[in-house]
Amino acid sequence: MIKNKLVAVALAGAMVLSGCASTPNGGGSDGLYARPIGGAPVTANPTPYSEALVCLANYARSQGVRSPRIAVGRLTDYTGRASLEGGAAVTQGASLMAISAFAKAGIRLVERFDTSVSELELRYANNSLIQDETGSQRMIHAGSVPGSDYHLVGGITELNYNIRSSGVDVLAGERTNGDPTGIFNRRQWVMNIGLDLRLNDTQTMETVDVISYQKQIVGREVSAGLFAFWDANVIDISGGGRSLEPVQLAVRSVIERAVLEISSQLYGLDPAAACSFNDPIGGGLTNTTGGIAAQSNYGSRETSNVQIRESVDRGHQRRDDSVRSYIRGRYN
Image 1 (cartoon, helix red, strand yellow):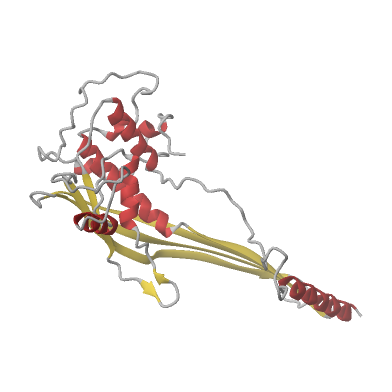
Image 2 (cartoon, rainbow, N blue to C red; image 1 turned 90 degrees about the vertical axis):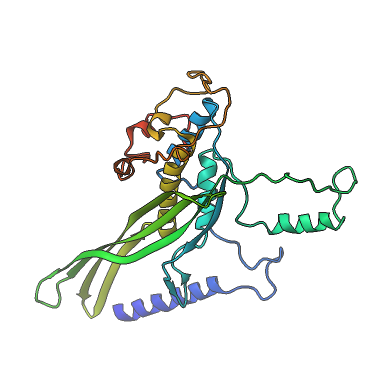
């Protein structure tokens, strides 16, 4: 009797679900078959190093320091990892991430990544086909396009799956068939991505800085279940969850860490000092440079200390005390 009731309940549930899944032939009155679920608001997309970049920008602005002009070239995916169904395993937009990171740091940028529109407009203007707002022909003037002082190139060079994995499986229950049996599984695995960037002097093509960073990514999976016989029926209940640190966010984090080191050299400033200064809006600092452009440390060939760059705490909003003490420049 109980078995027949369970079968009837299962059939009724299946019919209800099939009715919910069906769609009207002509759509709704507003022309929509269904409305999307969700509705989470759009939020900022910071990394643990975004706050340090904003600190650096505010400090340079308060001191009247201007950076050299930077152009971002193609930061290519060199890992070669791809699948037939999912495509490339690593983001193909690393250059866009680097541009966003330099913007957070307040670095002056010139477009070199996608110049198709500018080149087309220049061609139209050269053929007397473009007019400005006054209705007159747009003129082409020599030296109207600012050049870059340095340009960034490189790429994502490592994607290593399953550097280490661990897990535990537990099965507990009595030997008799009528007693319930419990199952518990736990898995954890670690992978990593690596990045190699170089900064070149645009005029001389001299490589003035090279940065190589990697970040490890962790994933976890937990599941539990209960299996038992109830009279002539079988009960099987299970549940669990799986989470993986976003791989593309890890790429953005590595890029922002590299851009932080490069930007500090472009400004000739120390990121640690930049994030511990007084609030510039409150007037704790005075302009000591008179708005003169910064003397980049690259010009004097004094690059950052290698040991300082290897510190995992440097510029991290949850590990670097200098960053945590600064509130106004948080990137929220």
